[in-house]
Amino acid sequence: MINKGHNRQILRIIMLGLIFFSGHISLKAQNKVLIIGIDGTRPDALLTAKTPNLDGLWQNGAYSFRAKTDPLSWSGVCWTSMLTGVWKEKHKVYSNSYKNPNVKDYPHFFRRAREQKPNLKTYSIANWKPVHTILQENDATVTIHRKTDAAVTKQVVKTLKNTDVDVLFLHLDNVDHAGHKYGYALENKKYIGAIEKTDKKVGEIIKALKKRKDYEKENWLVLVSTDHGGSGKGHGEAIPEHTTIFYIASGKDVTKGEIKKQVNVIDVAVTALKHLEVDIKKDWQLDGEVSGL
Ligand SMILES: [Zn+2]
Image 1 (tube, rainbow, N blue to C red):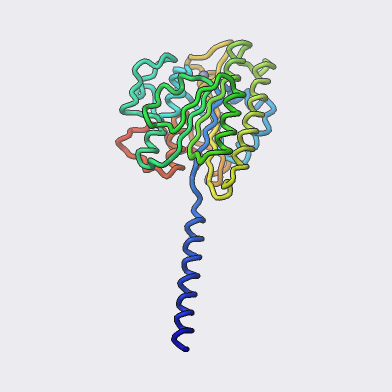
Image 2 (spheres, rainbow, N blue to C red):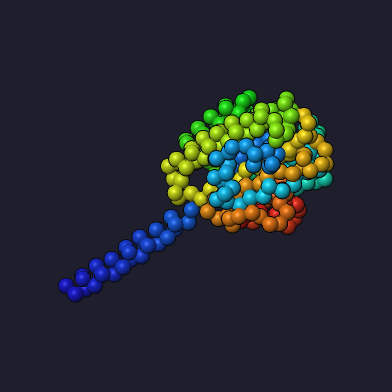
């Protein structure tokens, strides 16, 4: 009789241990990254526009409104820098025509992430199709091009709702369209208006993110940035109006407040890799740094 009770006691201790141990494991949230790319958005225009959703992200997160993009401020050059973590001298994209990008040596950060974590589900959903040029086979689990920001947003919301996505990059283009058509200026109501409409889309996306079934168990880092600014009806030059960009990082692991150091467009990929707990190798020769974590 004594033995039986004793055994039962031991069994109870083992069971309690197992419960504690499994509880402990599930406490470790799965790290995930959402990158919202808003083409052609000047930081001063962002601060002029009424953007409650973006404000919610930066005011509760880490941010810089004096970050820098490539001096050659074309979309192709700058998106490639953002997504590879290196400057154009390495990735070799010098225009929007993406001639001979050096993706072998400096691939999209999706590839770096999946080299170490092959099970990561990586999604790229873009309005401007050329942004996908640098993706090699198997870099992205899913690559989707949509012709409008509304369709991109719809696809992103659907993806966040229904899939076990780990990394999602999305690209919205309407702000840049407004800049090219009406002018990139603070006093331009149509440019400012485009930013305000885009903010509503950001709101829909964040709402969908927070409604994920396992949102509380997941640890999302949301990064929001742009490829370049603009002046007049264009961009591409090495002047502050074109090269000054914003950078926002939001999530449990960010160090809240303004980021004091110089932030650069190349920091986006590196910060994403860091959050995904990828071991960032020296021989990758990345130019970017972790910003906001
Ligand atoms: Zn652009």
